[in-house]
Image (cartoon, rainbow, N blue to C red):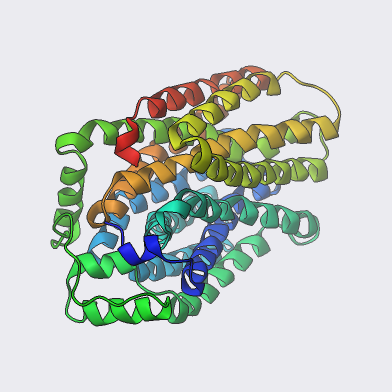
Length: 438
């Protein structure tokens, strides 16, 4: 459902605060995920490990993210967005700081899996929060603003990495990210309200009073009584809650759109995480100095930031499905020649920027589709399971790249391989009926 007052009123300070806090949370996700990528060359040299072993470490966090998205985030539709965000922050903080003490591939893999649990569960909850506090006219753009925090976090981590890695090693990056995650806990506790949509649908004791308090903070008309809801809220707990949510995702007219969304997420995650995990290492292998290779990671994420925002803006003007499709097709076009270009550092950085402009922009659009596809009662479950299926692609993407490279496939043809999922994702999204994501 969507609260009528939110759609009909100007954007309030509280709504902008919600968006700002969630943006910072997504920024932290960028730091948490990309810290390992920027640290990879240093860790490889320090521990004398192979590419295949490093690929397993990359994938460990993604396994955790999958579990978090599929089995933890659906509980958000039962306990609330705010509480789940706080639980996730605690898991991320513990995992990141503990990772700084890892001394083997096995210990790092286990700790990255723990961190991934928190990242996977917080992403779906925060996306729902942003969607539910955004008026319909701004929802596409606000969701892309939120998701643009990820590449900004990655950029900041890259800048810090250029200053820290050579003199202090990789461990301070993880300590920094963990401390900031813990620092966000009081911010969320004191400043982030519960989702207004969740309060209305939960029908819990005191929900009307809490909802009206939030409406007054936004200078909007209070409820005389709680509005009717579209569907019954999930009231079971644990595994039963997850199963009930999944059943609703796959019943009736939602079944085909849900499966198409899962396929699009899986394809785009495979290519995206191939790029996120390997672009720094591959850039260095192409002959760039370590400093230039780190700037390649920064160019990658700057392109992702700009592309995400541009997609959000264009989707409001020209249609969400159409713009996502165009971005996916252009991503495939840019990926194919990228691996074959051997030229100056400046040209390589420009190409990386363009590549991620389209890949990340299209990918961010999928979150808008997921948020619009499902009602409040199962929204976080829907987003979480879409992310979870996407993580299947993310888990195998970096590992497949590592094995392909280890088996002797050239960098150039590895990039060609990962253009194919972009085409599949674009064709899948354009087939969704417009009425299903209105």
